[in-house]
Length: 113
Length: 109
Image (tube, rainbow over the protein chains, first blue to last red):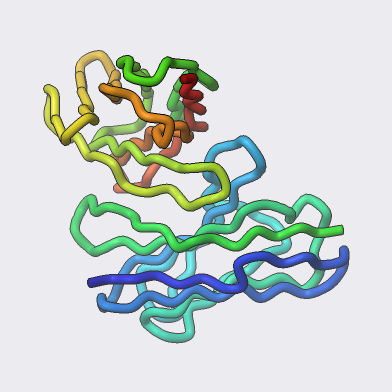
């Protein structure tokens, strides 16, 4: 069966510090991968998605970036965090049928102070 | 533009039935998903509808009317553990998932 991991679970970072969040998927190959952010009490905002290694599409221009160095690894990064980057970051994987269900990792709660 | 509308919050009583509505206006339609999200946790998949009609899964049912751009999630025999947010999401013509803001369901004893 497929599983998706995210770490860390929680993170408190000062403004201006760098960020690296990692997501890995097991039990499937060539998944579509997604990064979402959810502000408190709000819906999901799509940040990035990837259909393959090195292929990243950005949905929201901001100080975040994403990379997919391996088939089942997706990384979200920032060089300098802003207060507005605080939120709940969710990674999701999706099979390659059209359409397919997205399955979410446990999430990372980021607080920028 | 693309738009998904859901009520922000609903309250229901344990043991009762509640219907959570979702209306959508999207560029094309390739299906509609419902997810459940407990506070502080990730969303989990509940249902997928692509054809008109009612799909039943235990205490949960999901209905779709494509001509009306409308879906609902029906929860029967409510339990306290059903307190959560319920997210509606539509697959558009580009197979992108458009998310609603979610409906927070509060269950009272």
